[in-house]
Length: 330
Image (cartoon, rainbow, N blue to C red; front, side):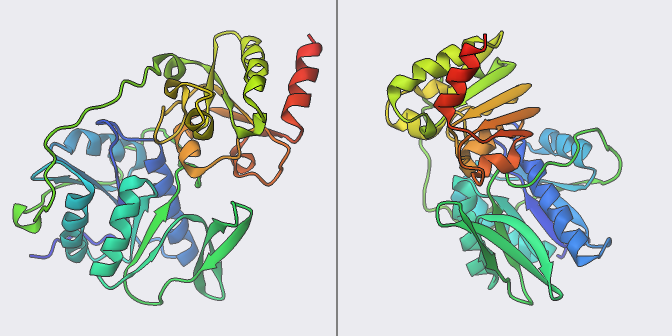
């Protein structure tokens, strides 16, 4: 039986460790951008929250966005496979024009499956949305994040999008409860035919409590040049009371910094008052980990680095030269 929900843009929430990540609200902002470019205020937006007991998270989403929120009870653990199969059923029922997912590990698995199964198009890694000659144009970064490639969706049918976290500015977080309803739904178990069964899961201890609670975080990236320059970053960090040093994934992968200091989707998600990015270009996975920062300062010699588009203040300079001058200034 068809539901009476008439949303045309469906945003898929992906809870992380039982919490709603900040980048969900960036997806809602992107949906609002699509509606604005269409010029159709009646093009409604809904957020779908899957889970074994999704109502609490759905309430949080509804309070912070004001859009219709679908609390969909899943008959099993939400995995990439179960989300693929479950969304095929739900999207058929809701019939949206657009489905928006985060470009996370799960989102990258689900989006192309959904587009293929429902005869739609899938556009991945969307970083900007514009309107040109009466058509929507989506853009993604290519050539090591230095060029924008335009992507034109099919004129008709479903369009599935994935957006890298940290790409779109989140809507304001004040409470807007009451503007949109919460609709409780239940996914029929018959929709799921899992081929993979998870027997158990062991999580590595991250040991990142210090960085997650810090009011000021100084992040070190590959732009520091060599491992020995970490001492400069540590001294620079010590100049700020209560600050903690973090790092991007490449430094962790090279063994320069312990995993507990990694900021990003596969590391710590932080929301300090101030984040200082030192020699960090700003990959989507790193931006996702620090997108909750109140203020962002970037120190990078490349003015076109993605991090600069998300910084409140960009200092275009050689990192080591700048830090040496800063330390000498007392």
